[in-house]
Length: 571
Image 1 (cartoon, helix red, strand yellow):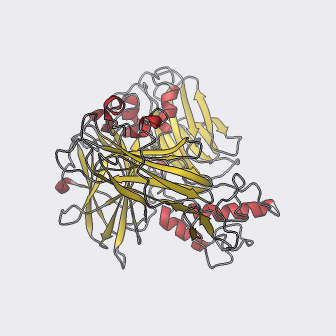
Image 2 (spheres, helix red, strand yellow):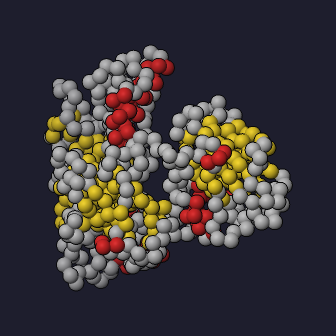
Image 3 (cartoon, one colour):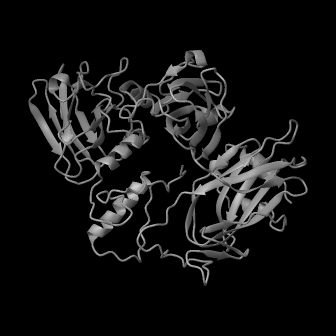
C-alpha cells in the first residue's frame, strides 16, 4: 500500500537500550518480518514471537508464509528444471537480433538460486570481428551476491578469472584483447567467497570496437527493473536509445476475445499471483489479459498494480471484467508517483477474469511507454477509512481542518473527488497539510471524477492545518464538488522503548495511561485525531501556497500554464 520511498524503511530508536548486538539483530529481524507482512507467531522458536527470545533465524513456518506472499525463489529465464545451464554443454546462447554488428551491448539476466548454482553462457562469433570483447557480470543494483566469472575459449580453455573482493553487490569484468575469427566464447558465472551466495545478476557482453552505446545508457537500462525481459526486448531497448516498446503486441490483444492468457508466476501457488510487462504505444491502444482466480473456500479481493517502466509517463488505467464480460466495481488505492493500484472485492474462487490496461490520458506524450502489471489475491480488502469529507462550491471553496498527532505517524493519503454534472466547468480539488510554521508538508490534487494519491508523509507530533480547496478556470462557476480524504497509517510504532527520540509525545493525559487528550476535548487511545467539522473561513488564499507546492507528480491533471494562469479560483 505504501506509495513512495518509505516502503520497507525501519527506524531505530536511538534512545533505546540494548544489551548486546545480538539483541539489536533479533529486534531488527522481528521488525523486518513485520515489514514483509508477517504477524506475531505463537511459536517461541520464531523471531516473530511477541517477546524477544533467542531466535536468530526464521522458522520453516515463517519461510512458508513469506513464500506464500512473495513466491519461492524461482529459476531464472535461462534455466528450466529439465534443462538448466549448469554445464558448458547446455550453455545459454547470447543471441543477436537481426543483423547486428556489435553496435549495442548484449545483456542477459541470470540468478544464482542456491549456493552451488553455476550458470554458463556462450557468445557466438561476429563475422570478421577481430577486436576486443568485454564480459561484465554485475549484481550491483540487483542483489548482494558476490560474483566469480570465468571466461573460456571454444575448447573450454580458461582465458581469465575475475572475482568479487567485496561483500556486497558488485561488478566483475574481463576483456579478451583480440577476438579470434570464428571463435565462440564461453562464460561461467558463480558466487564468490565474498558476501551472500544467492542472488540475481546481469551479464553484459560488448564488442568494444563496434559499440555505439554509452556506458550511462547501459547503467540506466539495467537500473530500470528490466530483469524479467528476454534478450530480444532488451536489445530493442538499446537499439532505440532506451525507449523501445517492450512486448509490443501490435494490437493483437485489444479485445476480451483476444486476451493474452497469463500463467501463474513461477514460485507461487497456482492462480495466486500473476505478472506481465507490456506497452502502450499510443493513447488508443488497449491490452487485455485473462487470468483465473485461486481455488479458495471464500471470495477473494483481487489487487492489481500497474507501474510505469522506464521514462516517466502515466501508468495505464486498469479495469476488471468477469467471465460474463461485465465490468466489475473497483476502488483506487494508489494513483500517483508512477503507480496505479486498484482492488476488486467479491472475486469468486476458480472463475475466469479479464483485465484491461488502457491509456489514462488522451495525450500520447503522457501515456506512451512501458508498464509492469502484478495481480495478487487476498482474503480481506485493503481498508482505507475516510479521514475528512465534505462539499465545496462557489460560496464555500475552501475547508480547513485540524489534525492532531500525538506520536510520529506515517500516513498514506488519497483524495477522491466525485463526478460533476455534464456541462460543469472543469474543476480540481487540492488537499494540503501545513505544519505550525506554515510550511507545506503534504499535497495532492485530483480532478473531478478522479482519485489521486501522493507519496506517504511522516508527520511528527504536533498540530497541523489541513486545507482543502477547489478551483476552476477564471470566469467559470465552481460546481458543487464532493470530496473524501482517505488513507491509513502504515507505520508501526512498536518495539523496545517506543519513546520518539526526535519529538516528545504530545496530548498525553495526566491521569490516564496509554490515552491521549486532544484540544477538542476528545480522549482516545488513538495516536492521532482528525477534526471532523470543517472551518469554512477563507483567510488563507490558494495563491499563498501555489508557489511552494511541488507540482511534479500532479502535472498530468492539466497543463501547467492553464493551472497557474487561469485555473485557480481565489476565494
